[in-house]
Amino acid sequence: AQKVTQAQTEISVVEKEDVTLDCVYETRDTTYYLFWYKQPPSGELVFLIRRNSFDEQNEISGRYSWNFQKSTSSFNFTITASQVVDSAVYFCALSDLYNAGNMLTFGGGTRLMVKP
Amino acid sequence: EAGVAQSPRYKIIEKRQSVAFWCNPISGHATLYWYQQILGQGPKLLIQFQNNGVVDDSQLPKDRFSAERLKGVDSTLKIQPAKLEDSAVYLCASSLVGRGTGDSPLHFGNGTRLTVT
Image 1 (cartoon, rainbow over the protein chains, first blue to last red):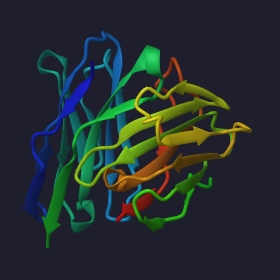
Image 2: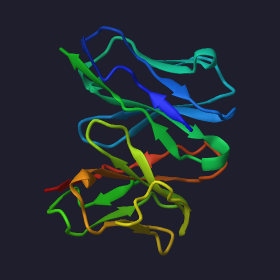
Image 3: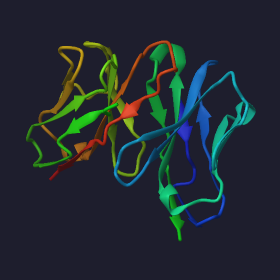
Image 4: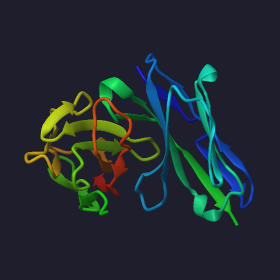
C-alpha cells in the first residue's frame, strides 16, 4: 500500500524567510512518481512538479526547489524568500506509475502562512 | 486552454437527500478522475475513467455513490442518499493519458463544496 506523510500540518513564516515543507512516502513499487501540488484559498489544485523514481537530481525552479532522497523516502520542497502569495496548502502525492497511471495518493497537506 | 469545469460551486443539502455534481474535462483528455477532499485532509480518489470505461472504483462507496461518463467526455457524480460524513469538496481532474505513464499530470477543477446538514 502507498502512503504519504506530511508531518507539518501548519507552518507560519514572515515574508522573505526560507521555508521547507517535508514529505515522506512509503511504497513497495520500484517505479513511481512523486508530485507537489499547491491549493490556494480558491480551492483548485495547482500542479508544481513531478519527479520519477529514477531521477534523484534536485530541481530548482525560480524560488522553488525540491530535494528527492530515495534513501530516506523523502521529497522535500523549499521556498526561498517566501512571499505572501505563497500562502496556501501544499500537498505531496505519490503515483504508482505502471498500474495506476496518474492515480494519486495524497498526503494530508501542509498549510503555509506567509505574513507580511 | 480552458480548464476543468465543475458545477455547482457550492451545494447544501439535508441528509438522506440526493445530489449530483457535473464535470467537463479539458478537451481531448481521455482520463477523468473524481476525488473527495474532506476538510483538513488530502484528496482521496473515488473513481477513475478512461474514456467512458471505469478503470478503478475500488474506493467508491457504491451503496450510495455512482458516477458515469457515458460519452467519454463530461461526467456526473451522484450521491443518494447523502450522509453527514459526505460533507467535503468533490474535485474533478483530467489528464491527457492515463495508465502506464506519468507524462501527463492531472489538471484539477475548482471543486464542488458539499455541505450535508
